Amino acid sequence: MKHKPAPEPDEEQLVRRTARGDRAAFEEFYRRTSPWLAVRLRRRCSDDQIVAEVMQETYLAVWRAAGSFAGSVTGGSAVGWVWTIAARRLVDAFRRRAHHAQPPAAAYTAVVAPAAEDEALADSVGDSVGDALRTLAPELRQVLQAMVLDGLSVRETAVLLGLPEGTVKTRARRARITMREALS
Image (cartoon, rainbow, N blue to C red; front, side, top):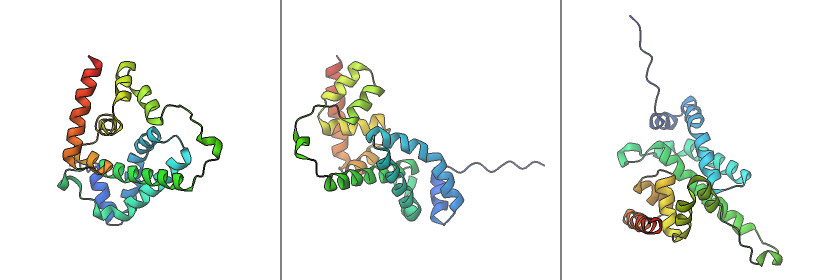
């Protein structure tokens, strides 16, 4: 009688095993999620050094906090959880960089350049859709980007942006209406 190989653990199971100190589970979780996470972080930050620091801080936090992962019990996923950690670490890195950076007086001259997110939007969506996205108010674009481009749930978007779920839903609805009008 042949034994069927055990099914491969999903990411949530890997996090739970990591919480029990299973280094192999952590390494497998890292192997599965780090390429995807790096791509998502690079969409928001073109500085490879910051992306590398955020990746390191994120996986250190995963190792240390795996026991606090609530998972599907709260409607979340392991991938959403790691993205939330990474997004917060990226915001922290931007704040640290802004706090420590003292630009020279010449840097205060007005230079109009597209934001990194606008460039990413232009690369990932068609011209008319990209133009419509760029005309959205920043708070609407943030929500739409998190939910549509990043594939986060309302709850994950709320956690990422530090907003109530109702506000996320309202902004998502307003963004869709505005987009529909802009594209018609």
